[in-house]
Amino acid sequence: MYDLFVIGAGPAGYAAALLAAKKGLNVAIAEGENFGGTCTNTGCIPTKTYIESIHLFNKINTASRFGIKTDKPSLTLDSLNTRKSRIVKRLAKGIEFLLKGADIDIYTGPAKVIEPTRVKVGEQTLATRSLIIASGSKPKRPSLFDDPGIWTSDTLFDVKDLPESLTIVGGGVIGMEIAHIFSTLGSAVTVIEAMERILPFENPQVSSFLAKNSRRVNIRTSSKITGIEGEKPYTITIETPDGEARLTTEKILLCIGRQPVIPEGLERLGTRLNSSRGIQVDDTMQTSLPGVYAIGDVTGEYMYAYVASKEAEIAIDHLTGGDQRINYRNIPSVIFTSPEIASVGKSFEEIDHLTMKQGTFPVSALGRARTMEENDGYAHMVCNSRGRIERVTIVSPHATELITIATLAIEKGLTAEEFLGLYHPHPTLSELLKETAEDVEGMSVHKP
Image 1 (tube, rainbow, N blue to C red):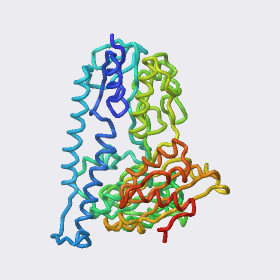
Image 2: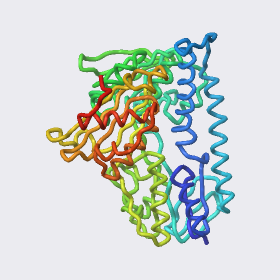
Image 3: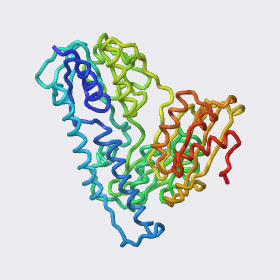
């Protein structure tokens, strides 16, 4: 009899298991594939491993701007894959080490839910007082794209040979990050997006900036694939605002979102699902079944590793008698393109544009950026009529690091004036936010 059984060892599951063990619970966890889930094996870590190498490659190519003479560097998809495999393996092993070190029993294989207090892994049936479902998600794959040769984010990072041409279906975060990688490596990349603009959930200005900055990528918006023929190369039929078009491409990558993976047995037990076809939970992460919680991508709502970890914390707190509730306010969005993009706060549609106060500041006017030979990007801050910060957008080097400062400011309800009460070291990239807040107040002395 376990106090807690966790299904899935991704960012949600392994965090929940470790937190529960720290609180003295007798814990077991089942994982059907690899420790670390999507994030570690086919998502966040592989993508950022490739992008970090791409970033250094581009730096070396522009070394002369820094006064450095170099021979022409080379970079291959095969070498990126080798580096990725080393990093992923080390991280996955690290998670396994943490679980074993916490005396958590590990079961290998997919788990089937027999009832809220019993699960089956392989031929073993196990009893538990509480159950956490953290079984993650998988790429959406409509029947039009059922050809096994069409890549998804789950198969992309096994590829070692660079295609001459790649068509990416979906211009969201994943699609644009992959477009950045493969266009830099030398593939002719086309992005097809059904919405009117890429990154449809970001500010229109951000979408426009990235579209213009993705000079090596052919972007087609308001377009939909209606047919696929052949293989190596594929011939794609596209419905566009100007009529039907055809495109020939060596490879296709499908990036149109992910869907929850619900363990066998749960729906039979009457588990309620939400509009995203994920497991419905309340603000303590409890499902409609007594003693059963669901966290991470399987809820179908906020598919971010950092949200999954927070949900794990909430579930374990409630399970052990606490009274914390999940808060989905101010979840930062991060995109690892070049330059990076990050935003936090109210959506563009939620902001009162008639009463808002706003400020901007360009990266090109920042001293630290100049020392880095970086010119592209800007920061944008929106405040309400009382000066309280409501949204911050950063397009700059290391924007994904800087956004945490803005997230804290918004979560704590700071005004632009209060934010300026802090000392901001010079010369740093964080001054980008200081200068932007000064522009909100009409006090920027450095804005061109």
